[in-house]
Length: 394
Image 1 (cartoon, one colour):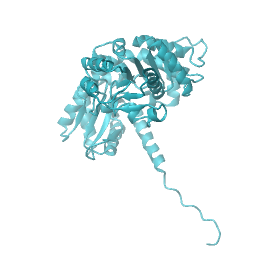
Image 2 (spheres, helix red, strand yellow):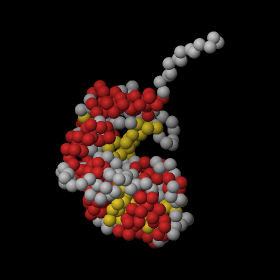
Image 3 (cartoon, helix red, strand yellow):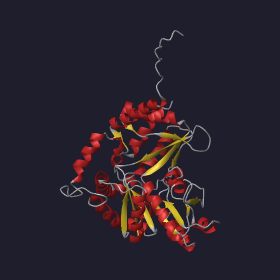
């Protein structure tokens, strides 16, 4: 070597940047598509989201009032609104659902003297929170069933371990947004009470469960001792969640919210977006659920007509306005076909596909959500979109 520095060879594109480019391509394709089943607010630009919030905020509160500070003002207004919608004594706003639910389960553990929580292994805390219930809150979890549905009353009755709280995720998202019947849900709750356990509902998507049960939200929430709801998963909010229940529990939860770092100085954008969602999206959910049943049936018809050897629409009919579609292809192949369809035809039928967590390789699934834009789709529209999608799998 002569001591002179050599020019460095150009670096290969980082895998992360390639993933970012692919994600941006998908978002651009979805945004440009003329026909979609739903147009999630999260895919809007920053400017579009700010403009939409500004345009609608005046319809839900007085914009001349002072901004919130540490949970008063519009945040307190949202809490009161949610408590009323669920028929609960009180509600507390949280920056995340993960925090809200951890606090609820921790409070119940202290009150029951039992730190064991019975829940499904596919429930959000077990799959999406990196073991936070145990690592942060010192709770232990047990699973009365591993079937891809909520536990039955008999499974709760026969379970051979004690537990202080039964947590029910309604709907159980990772099993396909599935729900029990109303009678099954009543029996499960009654059986938990027989075991002297309290019942907490993970209702991140509780808003869209009413049509399936044929009951209003207060009647559903009344089955439980506490309920958590999300403001962005269904209502199109920016972020945030609420924990509702007895006034004494909610007051205790506020203390733990502060200890967990959730006592934010100002949260008015999230609170305003949540109030807008309650006004605009909540009344439309029965129509979304009804249209999802039409879309799901037409998807099955379309795949059968296209000669796809195996497929599954699950559950059929859907229990909410969300459901799963399964196909025997690699996830990247299916996602590419979905993006190409949006780019080439202006119709976006599917979004991101993921490989199955278990089972034979080469099987993938996607989640379909029907929103305001999906109300315009007929069954024939869906069948035609399936034909175009399957062409791009060849």
